[in-house]
Amino acid sequence: MLRTLADKWWVLLINGLCAIAFGVLAYAWPGVTLLVLVTLFGVFCIFDGVTALIAAGARDGDRRSWGQMLVIGIVSIVAGAAALAWPGLTAVALLFVIAAWAIVRGVFEIVAAVRLRRFIDNEWLLGLAGAVSVLFGVALIVAPGAGVMALIWLIAAYAIVHGVLLVMLAFKLRGRTRSGIWSKA
Image 1 (cartoon, one colour):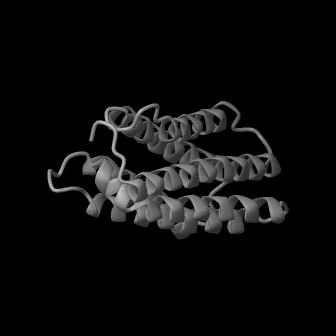
Image 2 (spheres, rainbow, N blue to C red; image 1 turned 90 degrees about the vertical axis):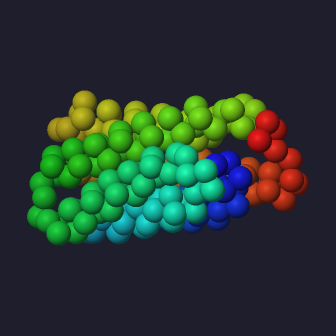
């Protein structure tokens, strides 16, 4: 699985860059309406889901562990489609959709990071990205009364941090692919 993930490092890179772009756009236009926020979130989730499905389809020959990426992809696409289909969602409803998506994604990333530890020494970037996702989702559930502006900034910060971590992981995997060094693989 690690070899396949390393060979498809660019999928993580694209995913991370999309997250960073989403976060920067959300910061650049803080006065966006809820409709624009819903649309940006919907498009981001669909791109995120598509990259996860590509990663699931690029699994290695033993067909292990592709189900997690498949679930992440489906959950992301469903969340994005729901956001685009019902743009009139209230801020609280959107908040809970985003929170559920972040928690589910984060849990699967943490599980994947634990499994990757057998193949990569001291691998923590994916686990940290998962923890950031879970904490972000929990923060949204705990404080649903936060203003839309605070929600936009929180979402933007999450997207940028998560995106940077995925970009770092992508380049780490790319470096392992180029050097041909595989610890325990």
